[in-house]
Image 1 (cartoon, rainbow over the protein chains, first blue to last red):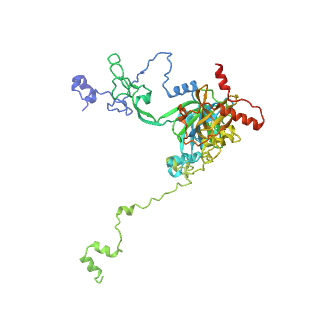
Image 2: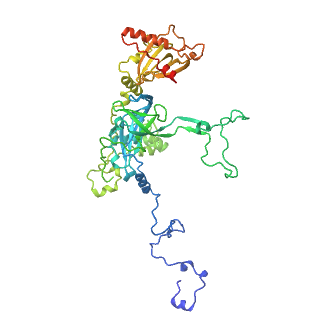
Image 3: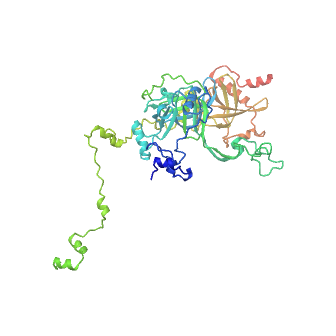
Length: 309
Length: 233
């Protein structure tokens, strides 16, 4: 029974610990109060700024947008897309004027077509997805078949993205890339998986000199020596110490290979020097990063994608 | 069935009565299978008011029908056109370096008059410098063919490996054929003093004299520049 005002005047309230909890609780502000049940994670709490709040401080550069800006500023993205090739083998070409014999690698492009695009708006960067070769549609997963069907290209054996700097580098989808995409005399970078060497010792893997044949050596002619200092060096093996282990079989980039010959009819691109990997491996060719961008006679057509992309 | 129906009802249970009435079934069918027939798909009515469309999943809205997967034809294959790109590049090289094919024929395995190991070969470079010697090895094939010539200059053995199709080579002539077919493909034993043929200068000089007589040209002394130059030193 609720106390009346007259009673309140007459009888003082008992001490708080004797009062019922409903009286002690703050009045509810209608039904809009969020019930948190004491769970801290959903209880609204004032957020504090974990960073140094000083006026005029530069914005943090760890964001995706900042990384993109840096990439554009450093000019390390090619203007145009690359192509997928198959390494066919090595041979040599004579320079008729100087008589020099130039070792070269023969690469072959096969049915390279632009399959799709990656755009800044949708994916955060610009890239051209290039497919090469052909594959029996029976062996292609249905989602991928649908993708090829929508894009209007045949099912491709190999698919690879090539990043480009801007929207101008997006070659229209379905456009075929022939060997004359690369001009004779220009420089390219090639990326491919190098030959796997398995578990290799430190001499083969890192070029260590090994140890003596004699002078009291036993069973340690090809092994590494010490792994580091004792007390002065922290009595531990530093991370990244060169040791025996698996060698090769990973992506390797060979930079600045000169294009010696191109033959769009047969898809042949002959580059100076060696390209990583065995014969028949897939090689990614793109304009060399560390050389001036090639002067393309007819600049790649601006993409047919919408302007707001 | 001779008994009347009423008497059967009185004597038997309902179950046997029903079994009698219905035709015998071949398989047992439960109530569940009876209820679950094939689901009949209904098309979305075409005359639906537009405000109801958002209630449908996207794939049921008009214009978002299932598209058939089309396998587009592949463009012309470069790999099918050219099965052996390395051979093609090499043949193109040969056609530039050796348009007549004479040099290739000189080292062609099918040619009985080819240069063989043990022959004395006289090579002239574009710079006019002649090099002669006994063929020790013929290595490589196609544009990579090379010969290893051995000679003696001022009683010192000299070996020189020459790329047959190098654009620096002006001419290659056989000065003397080996009298007897060599039984080795690589005459490395010529490096041993007891087998060394020594200088082939005399043979070359004689060949040049004969050639000059036949052609009626000047008896230009070739192949001696090395000796004279070395002698001056």
